[in-house]
Length: 227
Image 1: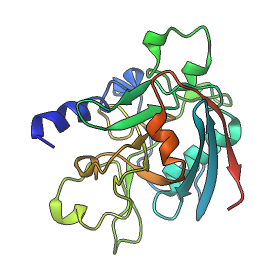
Image 2 (image 1 turned 135 degrees about the vertical axis):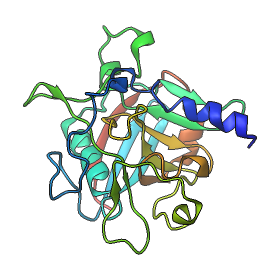
Image 3 (image 1 turned 90 degrees about the vertical axis):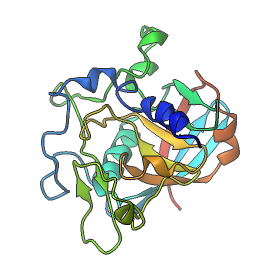
Image 4 (image 1 turned 180 degrees about the vertical axis):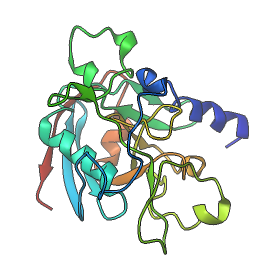
């Protein structure tokens, strides 16, 4: 992919997906692992079925490689946060890129379409937005790295969860520790995003459904399932 094209595509995930998190204060307060995290963590793997207006998608969420990111996603699934939300960004031109959704604000019919992609998960217990740190796991390291973008080519060769076709990852603003609820699915291998965004799972069934999703299609329901 020509450099100018992937830079343009990358810009779609930076700052635009979570406009509200472009401020410095809207980031994870503790860029550390599960021992210090105030958000839920996941040990092992979990399976999620996401029923969309185009059909069902089965997701494997990997808590071994991304415990904080996967735990946050599973918690939001359990809370029903994704039910009724919209796939607000689908990028297939000039080349396939991502299908992005999960903005909690998009499930509210009062939210203008122009505001889709600006919302975060608001924890009802605190009334505050929940943000999680950038989390990337490398082979040979005991724990994921938190809060820092990695661009070293030799490091990226050792990444455990890469942006393969069907990879499930978190959208964020320019600040590394600003992911909240919005996620995306890679429509093709996107190695240019490795080390910059947190992959935490993959599509195991329903890639044809992902390929059929159009902007403004909905997630009818997301739920945990037994493998």
